Image 1 (tube, rainbow, N blue to C red):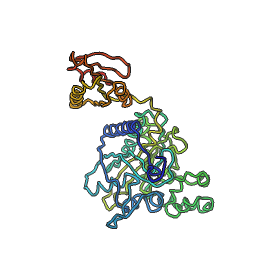
Image 2 (tube, one colour):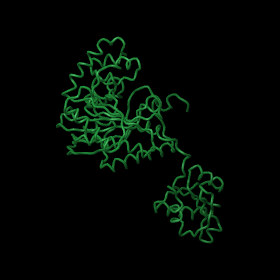
Image 3 (cartoon, one colour):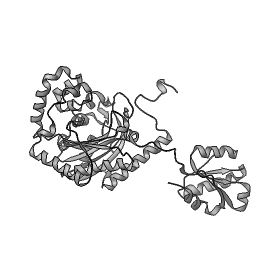
Image 4 (cartoon, rainbow, N blue to C red):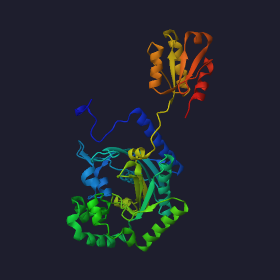
Length: 417
C-alpha cells in the first residue's frame, strides 16, 4: 500500500527481518556491556502519568511543550507515552522501594512528536543506564566509559565524547543572572523558542541549534567558569579519572543537554557519520530528581543512547550472513514423513530447522536460499534406503553424504557464527 489510512503513521518505521536482526545484535551488545559493568535490567511501562514528565523535564522544556504524546484515558487520567526513560526509572525505584546503590539499564521504544528526519523518528528506541545512590566523580566516569566501550564494540571508530559541568543549586543562580543580563540586549535576535527559554530556563538557550541564535551567545558567560568550589572539585576529579583511564574527551562549555534535571557533569557522544545532527546519545548527573519526586536525596547519573542513530553511525553492514538454520529438502513426497521426523528431532535438540512444503526440490532450494539458511539437509529415496542424508553447505556449495544418525552434530559443526 502506498499511503492513506493503511500506511504506517508518519515518523515510524517497519523493521524488516534483516534490520530487525541487526537491531537485536546492537541490543544484545548493549545488554552484555551493561552486565559487564554490573548493571541489572529494569523494564518500566510504555506510558506513565503525565505529571512525572512535567516534573522531571520541566514545564518549559521542548519535550513538555511540543513533543509529548499525551491523552486522557476513559477514567479521566492524564497519561503520556514515555518520551524518555529516566523519569519512569526514578518513579519505579521510589514506588517499589528499591534500596540503593543501584545500577540499572533499560532499552525500548519511546515517543516524541517532532519533525521526522533521518535517525529521528516519532517512535524511536533508546538504550539507557542509571546509577542511583553513588556520588563519587569516578561513577560519572564509569558511566561515560560504559558508553564509549559499547560504541567501540560496535565499530564506531569516530565516536567522540564531549564533556561539561553546569554546576549545582549553589552556583547556578549567579550564573543564571549573569547569562540573563548578557542576553537581555539580544532578545530581538533570538528565535521564538529561545525567548521563551530565556524566561523559563535561560541555560536552555545554549542548547539551541539555530545558527542565528548561536551567534548571539557566542561570547556568553560559560557555566564551567562559574562553578562553586565543590562543583569545580567534582569536575576536576571527573577529568582526572577520565585521563587516568585513557578515555579521550573534548570540553564543550556550551553543553547543557535538553532536560531540566541535570546538574554538574553533562556529556554527549558524537559521530560525524550521521551528518550535522551528530549526537548519538548523552547524559549526565541528576542529584535532585528523587527529591522532586517526593523521595529522599539520592545522587544519580546516567545516559540514554539513540538506537537508530547508533545504527546509522555503525560501519556499513556486509551482505546478510547465513542464518544458523538447517533447511530440509525432500526429493520426492515419499521422503516427507522422514523429513518431518528429522525436523522434530532437530528442533527438540535446539537446532533451528525449517522446511518447505513445495513438491519440487528446486522450489525447496529457492525457499532455503530466501530464508538465508546455512545448510540444506537433503532426503532422497537412495539416501533414505541407505540410512543417510546429503548435507549441503549453502556458503561453499559443498555437499556430502552422512549417516542420518549423526546429522545433528554435523549441522552444528557446519553452522558459522
